[in-house]
Image (cartoon, rainbow, N blue to C red; front, side, top):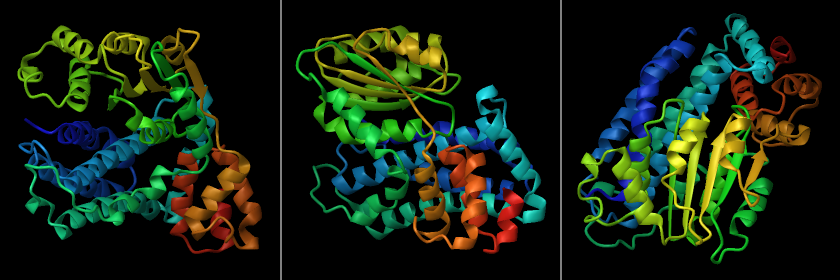
Length: 396
């Protein structure tokens, strides 16, 4: 039987590889040099997917293996979230997103004069580098040779987690994370299920916030799972993914491959009925999709919690019909947080910006509108340009 941590990682990497095959290349491939970087990224992730497949027969991986596999899964989710939002902004966004979309398009038109194609490719290079580092650490610590038939007690090298520290603690996340986590844990004993909806347009960091809440409180629940939905959800596959994450029983999942959607939902309800569970359902695009998935999670009196993320307010409202549910609307970063993120990405510190760049930085950040993704994208371009004011003026 495949360990749940392996199943979850494979489930995260599979859809990501599919996305990198077509939509991403079509969107970004218009810029010379970027398509090659995307192919390289896809190649690295495919190799990592193959490495994960070698672990499919492991029943009880040791702690180092579990940590490595978990980091692979997080990397897949981070990468997919980043590119989903980037494509969304460059594609058909709503009127709420028109300003940022036009800003990015104008910036893209200036790429020829700025030579910043290299900057976009560099961001993909950064992802490739992170992947390679994880692969190298796997080899360095001889994870393939680890005894996975018994519980391991090996010390996990802190550099494994450090690879993702910056991504996991983005500017402005700590406050909302702590407040929402406290709300989730309030009245823990024998209370009805609650749902938290995190809503906001692409690029605001909904998935990051949900993942931070998940990290902080998952240990307080009998079982927990994190699944991504996307625009064309496969309900049966999603439900089976949750089952794989919350159940360690070989007997229970013996025939899981042949279960249809109705059976999968029934089995998950049976599994969770008497348990206090935490489930993150990321990136819900429709009320229909929510209704199809929600019916699999029993409204027991065990203080279970669901966190749903969506870009659509109507979907968020549908997820939270009860008086004890909560909708949390993501807001753009404040001016100080935007400036701190921008300067840290370019200069390595929030307080290291030369005076000559302060005024033009304010103009650039105004156009970014507090969107973390926009700030990260533009700072990535500027970080690879000569540090002269004229270059920055072209972007503002």
